Amino acid sequence: MPVFEAHIEDVEQRALTGTLPAQQDVIRLMTQAYQRYRTLDEGVVADYIPILGRADPARFGLSLVGVNGFVHELGDTAVGFSIQSISKAFVFALVREALGHEKLHEVVGVNNTGLPFNSVIAIELNDGSPMNSMNNAGAIATTALIPGADAQQRWDDLVGGLSAFAGHPLEVDQEVYRSEAETNHRNQALGRLLQSYGRLAVDPAEVVDLYTRQCVLTVTSTDPATMGATLADGGVNPVTGERVVSAETCRDTLAVLASCGMYERSGEWLFEIGLPGKSGVSGGIVAVSPGKGALGSFSPPLDPAGNSVRGQRACAHLSRALGLNLFASARFDSTEGALA
Ligand code: GLN
Image (cartoon, rainbow, N blue to C red; front, side, top):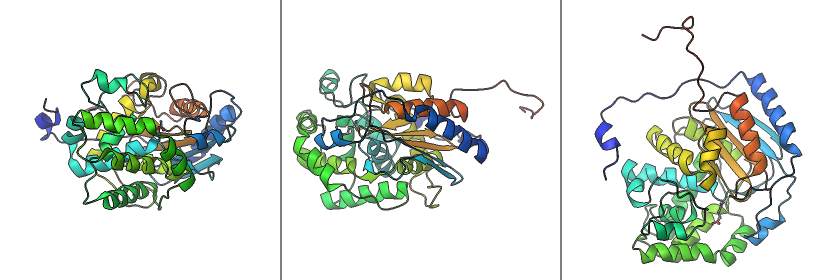
């Protein structure tokens, strides 16, 4: 089935406008959100990757990066954690940038499975399709599409691209890598299952290893905020000024995050928060407000779908308080300007 863009590619594109509130208001409202949820004691720290079970549940870092380069950080914003599934969003963007609008739609898909992030049955129910790039199978299929002569070049391009989004070199946490590589039997099975359906053009063991390494890059909560702000800024990192991807890639990436970024809770997340977002099982969240900026949070206790509880609450609070929700409108005020 052809994607819609084939029919509308000659249409001139405009982007959403609007700005964040004044800096002192952003600081005040972020402090409010941080204080309100700092002591919230709900959720469970993931331990299916053994080393993640050692995380301190009290940690809470909250960061915002605006498209004007404004950065505000509260709490444990210096504590490193593995990026985990948040990497899926940015690897999607790199592959989308390299291969164009249609390729990922065709090969992986852009619809939600309604099933958990590591579901096997989702593949079986959909004729071998992983359905979208934000669950584990789809992310493995997406990583498999990174161009490059060999595994080393694909890894160098992947880590270079993610580092450009973050604005500094990202590094693998070797201890988390070992813990994950020793126990990721399910991801290896997902790789094999995709192979059995003829949906992987490369060796499954190699691509699962690449995927595992992308998940164990160390970040702080400000990194996903900066990476998200790059998607909010038409593809230019607002802190470094470097263009990382095109505006069209940002648009496509954010659309997939909106529908699939929070797994089977994506509908509820959109209903409450109204922003494209992505979570990771170590407790990170990025929420992106196109044209304005992005929030990054880190707090290990998770809900049953694997999304950080404090992070979701803080994003819900700030999406309302900062006016970020994509679906919120106010009555047109004719004294402020004419429509025509
Ligand atoms: N690396 C993790 C996994 O493959 C990522 C999952 C997640 O963050 N939800 O299970």
